[in-house]
Image (cartoon, rainbow, N blue to C red; front, side, top):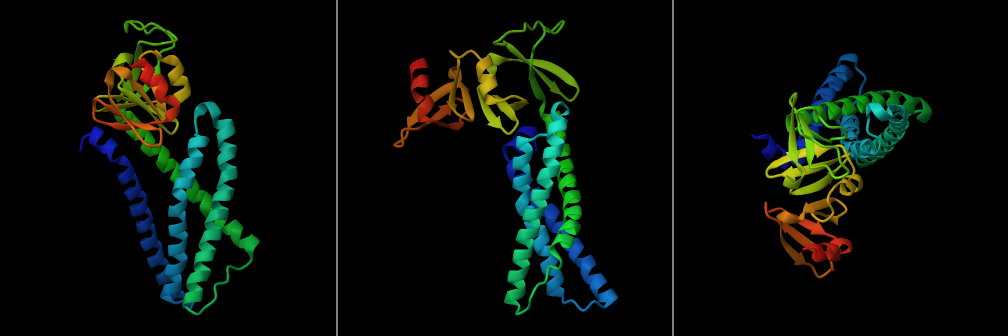
Length: 282
């Protein structure tokens, strides 16, 4: 599978990865717990052990998107660790509280269906115990997320705006740069800004689309828009900017919004807020 093909279906693979990972953890943890219950003669039934592990793992899986959302708001970068680390530590408490609350509610419901009663025990004592486990899970999940991102960015190549002229690269610093530096697998090369077909918001990055290649740039949509030639690049949506040279068709919608078809075949949403400005420019 090529990198471009993978990036096109990466969301499905990422969802599948988390599902497979937590399924493996569920099966292994459940098997160990059942063996321990039988070995120690604790008297619990198999369905109870499955209930404990299943509700815990399933709730953690549900909270992965919450973790990803928070990390987009407070990414762990060298430039903002003093702010991001305390934020993540505080959020880990909320993360654990959500995990425990949903998990206990599900267990009580399952026990009720089995004509039994689930006792969580002393709330304060049990929450401290669960938080220590949840913090470990939280930290390991973040480590996996950042390792994965690092590998993808290394393969994909990360773009950066030029702020100073690079010797031998024929690049001039400008409020509207003509070239963007890309670092990929230890190599550096330049891409021409006018070759960018469209720009799409993606978390803490914007993705620069050139043909079937996608280069992530650590920048906001607002700031990158300010650095581009506004006669050639137009904002069509809060998450999309297009190069008018690659605009193929505008399809009006009854809502007042529209859809934009670019020459590469992608169909993008256009907000009514930007529709008139684009129509005037073309």
